[in-house]
Length: 75
Image (cartoon, helix red, strand yellow):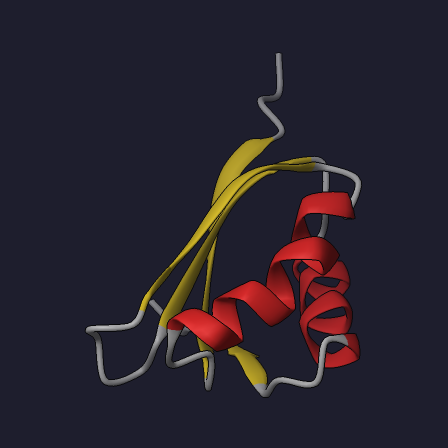
């Protein structure tokens, strides 16, 4: 049985509490997001999204709509 739950990781420019507050309603309302967090201490401001169905592209579009830069983090 395939498990849809996966961690998607992205490099962003979400770099402070105010930025997190700006993107929060967008990610909280996105369908298929179980949990998300941004590591603002990392130079690449890593956004980790626990996916339960949302695609990498959907996360990118959601964050871009919130006005931030985002790109997939190549493992």
